[in-house]
Length: 205
Image (cartoon, rainbow, N blue to C red; front, top):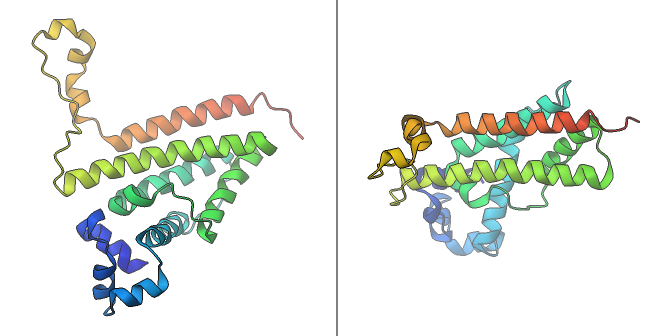
C-alpha cells in the first residue's frame, strides 16, 4: 500500500486510480483488479496502512489516560502526514489486524480506567469517533488548501457594524490565526479530563 499512499500524498484524492496504480507498479490496471475488486477495496487497504503507521512503536503507558492521549496524537499526526489518505479513509472499518490492534489498545485503556462490558464499548466508540472525526476533518481542510479547492477555512469576519458582535470582534485576530493542532490538543484535554472525572466515580473490582 506504500505506492497508493504515495500517490495520494503527492497528487491528492482524485489521483488514485487503477490506471495510475498500475503504472506506478509497472503493471496494468487489469493486474491491479486481480488484487482489488474495486477502488473501495483499495481505500480499505489504505485505511489499514494508516492504522499500521499510527500504531508503529506504540506501547501502553502506566496511566490509562496517557495511553488514550498517545493514541489520539498518533492518529492526528498520521492524518497530518497523509492528509489525502486520511480524508478518504480515516474512520473506515477495515476488519484488518491493524484496526483490531487499535481497537484493543483503546479498549485496554478504558478497561484500566474502570469501564466494563457495554459501557467500555460505548466509551471506546465515543472516543474513537471523536478523535477520528477531528483528524479527518482537518485532513480535508489541508487537502482543500493544497489542491486548490475554493473553500474558505479561515474564520475572518468584517461586519458592517462590529459593535453588534463585540466578542467576535475582540477575538478576531485569534479566530483568524488559531492553529488546528492547538485546538485538537485542547479538545483532547477536555475529553480526557471528563473521562478522568467519570472514572473516579466507578466501582473498582
